[in-house]
Length: 190
Image (cartoon, rainbow, N blue to C red; front, side, top):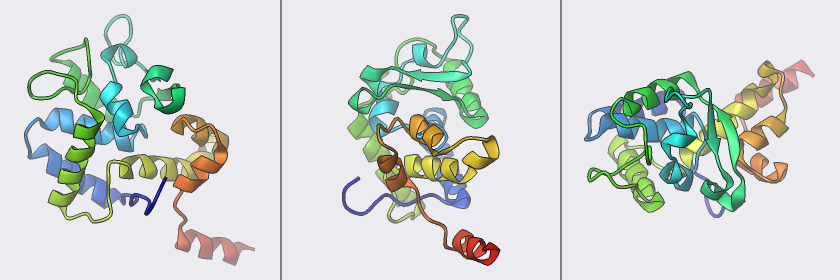
């Protein structure tokens, strides 16, 4: 990450963003875009590359795992991600109309580019009045929340690294936002 890192979304800010996109054009598609970023940690380029074959089973039901192949991920870092229930519901709604080809399409039915998705996020955050946010905010939120909760699932930061598709744990650590209140509680426990 270069320059100022994207802002982490608080739960209320994510709800605000989801409410905002629900009022605009293509609300189901836009909800799926936001959740692919914040609940699966996908980059804009990965969202743009997502195809229905990566999220549905042979029987065309939404799968338990999102299978992101190496060609669709940054630096060939393909991965398998469990699909969050909220994302599953959004994909199921979106899939009611179509279960072949790209998941995220423009109003003309064409695959959207990563740049268009980045611009959509910029417009949505501006419309919500959320300063410091970018298309990477959902991804940083996903990685930070996963890092804070991984111990409850019996996992480690290595699991977060794999979900993020990072080759190095050092890269994953750069995404994780610290929590001053948690630090105060931790010091009191010592």
